[in-house]
Amino acid sequence: QVMRDVSGISSLEAQVSERLGIDQVIIVNGDSDEDPLIKRELGYATAVWLRQEIRSGDTIAVTGGTTIAMLAEMMPSLAHGMDVQVVPARGGLGENVEYQANTIASRLAAKLGGTNKMLHVPDFVSEDVYQSLLAEPHVRERLAMIQSARIVIHGIGEALKMARRRQLPEETIRLLDSGHAIAEAFGYYFDQTGQIVHVMNTVGLRLGDLKKIERIVGVAGGRSKAHAIVAVAKGCRQDVLVTDEGAARAIIQL
Ligand code: BG6
Image 1 (tube, rainbow, N blue to C red):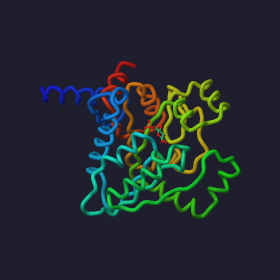
Image 2 (cartoon, helix red, strand yellow):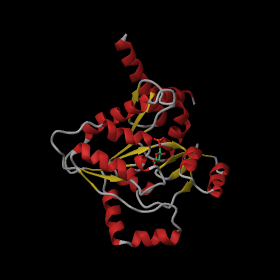
Image 3 (cartoon, rainbow, N blue to C red):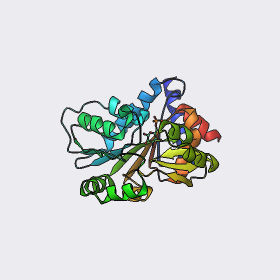
Image 4 (cartoon, protein in one colour):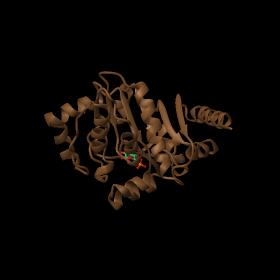
């Protein structure tokens, strides 16, 4: 019985990998839409992956969100601290502090026994303020550190849900709606073909920076995120996807 389940999951992993053009797909049993405990499983599977992948000297960038928060939560504390650095992929994106990238980066760093650098920059700044922030030596130094990450681990959201969670202005929500945005990652909103509909003015990793990053890991589950996962896979390179059965079965049916 157990063996059959295992092979069922690995054939599902192969199908999703082929469908999305993502090298490594890791699927946990269940559907996080139906059972919130499955999000912990996503976090745990990501933690297992990271522990195998991580090496001394690494910089790891993480985004915010309830899913990536589970990575920090489920990562066991390493007995011997590692020489690694954990940074937020982007500045605050208007999330509840628990789910902000800064908070998650500092928790993950503590578990790994590594160091953490925060990026304290406000959301929703005007283009002028954004440009002045980028000119700040402190911000530039942090940004360079973030851009030098070898591994980035990010969440994937549904566009309108994320826009509302971040309390974006009605005007932006209308723009997302009329542009048929369905997915969000890194503050970028994508339509189903992977085209960018809108980008937030937030200091941090930009899509162009991903080219230099060795391992881009997306973590998202629940069948409600199936469309969003497919759109993000089209819009930006993904090397690893950690998802659940609910999302995976929906993806192969799309
Ligand atoms: C956010 C990330 O914090 O989490 C987003 O910045 C991502 O890019 C979102 O879409 C996903 O959130 P959750 O809670 O569904 O994991």
